Image: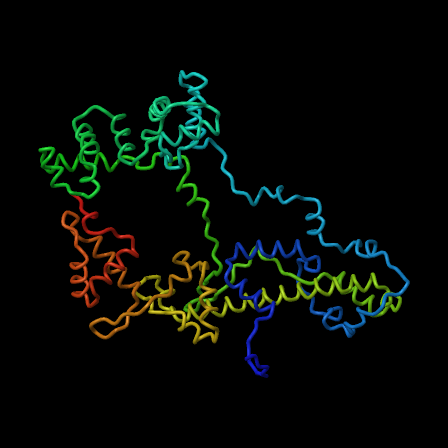
Length: 489
């Protein structure tokens, strides 16, 4: 049965300004610069410049009734276009109106020079091929990825060429073109698998016995080589350990990704520039935290809009003009948005500084010495208790942010870690344990690498009593392979 009841509830809702602050906390400095540029373009009431101390013209302090904006319109009309087009229009609005987004070339990273695929096409042009074979070669080169490998099998390329190039061909014909491309530089390009890539490079070398044995290993014992079962390979080749070591060294010197010399991962790493959000400066034994605001302009509300409100208040004929009141309503929305945006930036800066200062204070010894052994166990709740902010706020501040110190640039998340108690009862950071684990792996006998159980036993002798599965978890986080794959001759 349906019943009508009266129920009282207490709910918490976020205002638009609070939501704006929360979103701003998450983004790093570079994205913040772009966010400000976007707001400057979209909101004409916002402009670059220092906010003036004299705020008599402030819209929010003007003594007017918003209900007056909804009164009936009068008969007088004002030419708003003439009114708004005065000499106080900010420069950025003029640039926005006259420059297309596509013209901002400085924001588009690009590289000058021959690309990897261009280099392959140049070699294709030097071959004695028919026009049909050249077209097939162009299509095959287009299927080579940045690492130098063919990303699609021959049978798939045969089907695609019919649709994209209008050429009816066969697997045999495409395979012949692939064989031609596999002779191009760099050696190993155009291979379908790592095994084939290594084989092509070794065949290009030719000559001595070591290369011949390395080619035999790649062709016939590649799985054993991948799993580092060197005893099986040595027995199959019937060679001594020194000769096997030379053969393995010959293979490991080959390039597993021949296309990387022309870009690929190297280009991506070179273009991924880290811009620190904080700059930490040391003054004697004290640290001063600065926000990296070098490219973030100061913002203020456009004076033209304040003048518009003053005119509305003081001019009765303007107050009776419906068109003018509509303009004032539009201006009020833009000014409110500009005020919210400016206040959100100030609150963002205050929150970031307070949080980073708390982290520096908590990890004072680390910033003083720069050694991981001085890192204290620290979780989000520790900083939340110091600052008074919510844990979610601390998480947003630490996400995708970096700090520049005299020891290098660190992600903020680097300073957070769980704690673990040693045999002596001392609490240490798990990051310190990972560092000790890395040192144990670096110092082990590579001919007999330690497994996880042996590493756990070794850490226990150093006072870190952790389980084997915990060692395995830390080893994976450090990108250390299992003992079998760390074996060397």
